[in-house]
Length: 425
Image 1 (cartoon, rainbow, N blue to C red):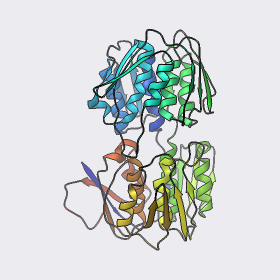
Image 2 (image 1 turned 90 degrees about the vertical axis):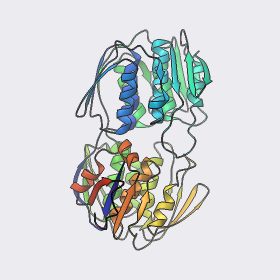
Image 3 (image 1 turned 30 degrees about the vertical axis):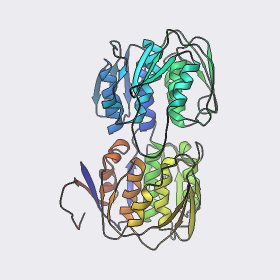
Image 4 (image 1 turned 135 degrees about the vertical axis):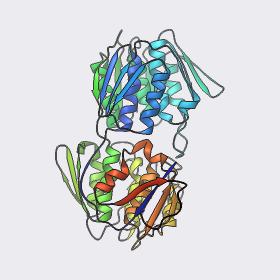
């Protein structure tokens, strides 16, 4: 297991390329299970979560080949309905194979998922939705078992929007008899990207990206090639890095349309944000102005950017209130930021952040994917050296983060976690 050492204080400048979106790639790769054929995916990020889903798809009998950022999948000989705990425990998005397996092979046995420790994310809405489509669902020995000789379209209403639930049921309903309507569906860009791929496969889906998605079931689908959209959370992280360090970063191969909430909030802090068709340039403003943040489902401010913005507010001029409305345990990073000198008080799902003049480097521990990114950002602006342990979380969602930040002028390197403490990065 590795650690990351950062010697803070450098102003970041230059250009960085954004990778494909993990949260778009995972359901699109899972969608290859819907039909036997050869699929080709481009702009697939090199991440641990991607390795896990490809390992799972291979375990089910598909042939998987990876070359740089391209992935080929041949699903013609798919023969296994089980997603075992040993693979699924690494990543909760593995549950995305449930819908495709039931739709194609009529049965599925999928372990209850693992993933980041950021709060309860039950898959009951996945199971309830599949039941509405006619599947028989049982839960035994830590596995979800689903069986349906035929899926039939139906009305599905989510109590709260669920991204993976929307994706799972959209895939299952693509091959159901009749029409399925998902109400209070999640609206994230990754869902629209999956729907676009499914439609090119022969599905009949409308409304993706809105609260109501209509899926008219078809008799068959075919394999396609697809390109993964840019990662909006990785983009937002580098945008915050520019604002935080007072530098100028041009972020290439981005999709500005997916980042309106982040762009708006950054401009409120005093940062200059210039938007072009496929790039965003951010220049930090001084002093950094405090702003309030409330996380909301898309198109609101994303919960996956809450921790990164908390770091920015930690060195801002004034007091800010950050409200987390999506996950109940998503302030775990606060204790580590406090170790670095941040003044943060948590009350329920609200954090009051009083900006300080500077943060101080310290040994810290990453608790989840986005918390890991926030600690990297804190290390970039802190005085002295920050050592971040358990960075395997970073490798789940950020491609070559130390190399990308290094290319922007950061003093950052990866070391074995058991290496002796080092005063310099």
